[in-house]
Length: 232
Image (tube, rainbow, N blue to C red; front, side, top):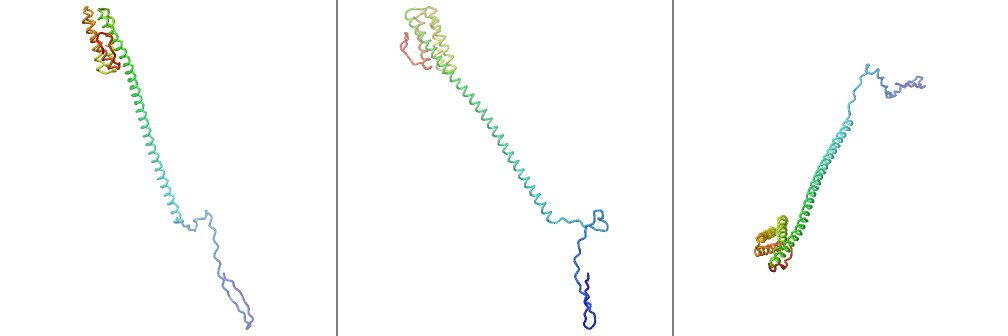
């Protein structure tokens, strides 16, 4: 826009016109046409994505990958812990089974020991009674009496019982000695049935010695014989 200033001078009677040129102001922004009028004689440019939006998307993808990696690592640690827990549980069950088996073995061993103790006591009692019966029979036979059949029979039964008991819970030597005693008592009974008191007495003496030997193996302390078989 041109602004004209008319300056009228009086010098020389002539009018002077000075023309001053002023700069034009910048154009004011035009309002965008309504949406309905777009595209009618007006070209619109497609906005080009700038570098800032691309750089913003890249850290997001990196963060997702880092999060996924941390998640996978956490899952791997959880699986490893679960495997360790399963192994510990299996080991605990195996230990419990071994403990139960050991407890069963201890109980069985305790039962065998108690049975052996009872058996030893029973054998000692049986052999002691048998020895006493034989010694009494020897005294009667030495006096010429043949009324010893019951004593010999009882002593023989007790010696046989001690022999069987020793075979299961004692020593083989003890079982053999008790068996020898019961066999000699059988010989003594047979001789007595024939009226041979001398043979019956000899066999009873041998039975007494075998019964005492078995008793010593069973833990009975040695003692002197009361019969005619002599001191033992």
